[in-house]
Image (tube, rainbow, N blue to C red; front, side):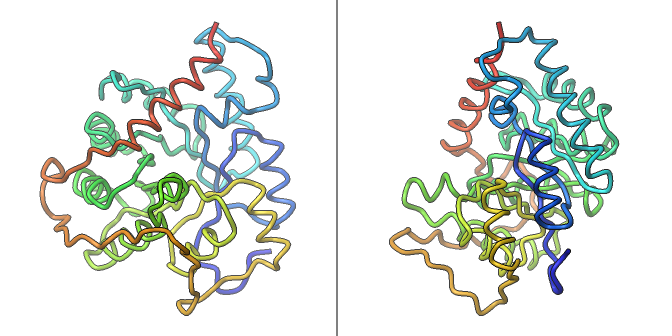
Length: 282
């Protein structure tokens, strides 16, 4: 069952409902699930298969509908298909469609100019969104500014830890910086720590008070086997040789267009998701 003192919501990062069942069994609870094209491509049912575009969307709908039924009180993130040429209108059209699939959806948009425009319009239409592929504090500031009329719970922001670590930067510093900025300026946006690669990432996100953590089943299992520890503020994260990411003094009351939101890792992430999706299509 849920450990005493756990404020952070725990999500599973997976495109396989069998893993949803296992996570619920391991923890005794599960607050939500995040999906993306790469995770859906790894679903055992897709192995060796090719789909038409309508078939792949039908398969994605089947997966998230099953997951939604397993965690009806949780959130399920559904990601739009986007490459570097996808417009805000095209993303929004998908988002509106996906949002009707299940009653507890958050629509994932990439944190690019077009993705932020789509999110801004989605929020005005009372949809819930999850801004993904976040690699900078400027992107986080822009998401707050673009969705400032949203209610609590309507907007998630997903900083990706592991991919920053991969290039020698301390990805957990980004999570800390965004959490600090949002708290200092009373943001409505909830921080969803993503690209969690190990138990130390997971434990430090808990210690930082990240609103949500999404994690692969393997790490949820490690946390469960360790007794579901909830570290406090005195937890020391073993950053090793990773280079620190400095906190930026940003005023999130400004217009979102004033922030620098370009990041090469966001672009690379979009390309990777699009490639995984396209590899499934006939």
